[in-house]
Length: 470
Ligand code: IMP
Image (tube, rainbow, N blue to C red):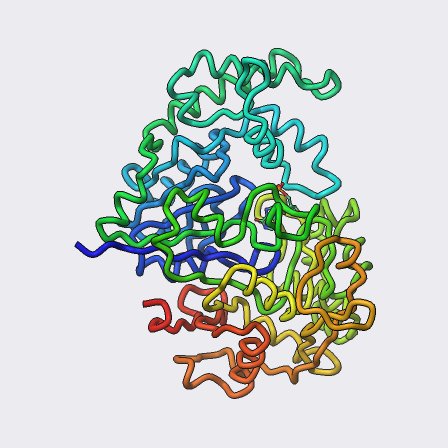
């Protein structure tokens, strides 16, 4: 029998590129959809036939009944949230039994991780899911005789002992942060119950994927967060705590790199970023960063902004206001946190950096329909950052430190805006000429072909070159 292969799909910007919808569109071509990094900090929304599922830990191939869903050892699992997610999915008529498999080598989010992230995650603007403290404990492994890194396999092998260690890890928190003993006991009990529910989904076979791929299975690795949020190669320190680059799929995804075939990049036709960190193409620059981080906007952004007059915002031509309009129209608020995402122009200088850093073979460009917004601005132009200048000299990469990156001067091109293109585009060869030339410009700057376009919110409002993916 012919052996199978694996493709890796990752985001090329700062997350929230719409990866889940692309995974959903491609899932028919694979047998397994697998996660290799992160945990409940991800927010992957899939909409099918009026059902919207906001997934956090379960891979996005969920609406394809016969596909296996795999959570690899590179992930960190919040058991309590996973149980809820499985229940929500079941209510939508989808049974995950014999479909969802979780590596026993994945680490557990423990109560003290949540406490620490909530207390210390503000400077980075984390999602407070305990992700950073959990990966830190994975690296620390043990403290004296106590396990800091608790994997599913460890706790299933010896539940009473390991749950006691998890409790001790919580008792070791500094006094000011330590929950009361009764609260800790409750959390441990909740964890124990969740463990019982999740146990049937755990696989203790470290070669689970290899066995299947050797017999012909095709795997699509679904990256969470995005390459610019990689803990090592991203926009450090304002990043997540896992490796999010494409190569990480072959560590956290539990398959050898020998099966790799293609690297698929997903980018949004404009940009967004959650939390802090440099963002040279941000519409409204620092004013936007402050606005999005402010107490009231942070807490009630979506509710407040829903009342804004979109036409007035767009006609003002003010970059901050145009960004707000884009955020409202595109619903760019954190899936898990509800935080308003900072909005920016498409940045092809960054795209080229991400493509080369990950060896991307082709790009799916999402949310192209929203470019129509720029038709309603006074200069009827789509601004695109295409080059970076550092102290007057052009650079073709994203600098390593946030200070250097903050100082980069973006060079912006104004592309004539268009709108009629989005109603129906049956194939790439029949693409509206203005949209086609926009696509060509992005391809030239990024250095790889665009094989798919998002043209609207519905499942069928996308254009996909199936020959590219076959
Ligand atoms: P953490 O992953 O919760 O530790 O958060 C670290 C940084 O990554 C913060 O700036 C988050 O906003 C960002 N981040 C984490 N997950 C996502 C995501 O799924 N989309 C966008 N940003 C994310």
